[in-house]
Image (cartoon, rainbow, N blue to C red; front, side, top):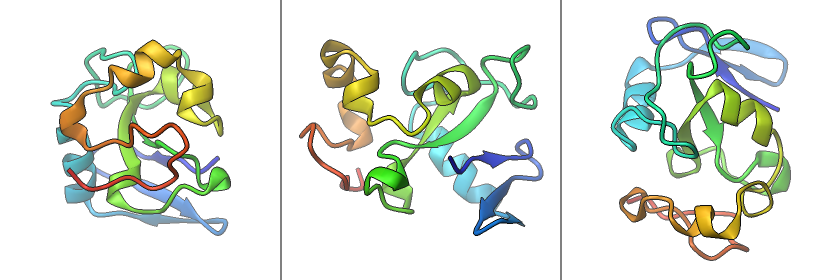
Length: 123
């Protein structure tokens, strides 16, 4: 699973085995989708390093995992706490979340409500 790590000041992403620094504006845009909350559990995110002792650390999740056809694009990147991102892994959100929780994700995010979708429109 590909993760974006490194804290808010020095975000990095692993691409084809290499760590590269990504634009801080991209992370701010992703975080702004939910006003600083985890998209799955809606807990307030913090900017500490993701680890088990910091379950609400801000991470970026591929809503539809790339391995399942998700795209490497802003519309497929969502803010998630370390705990939810780690638990979800490469699972499709319709399989990881209950159907009720999945359909209650904030509509203003522009997320796919067709459970079979692999691409999502930009809100």
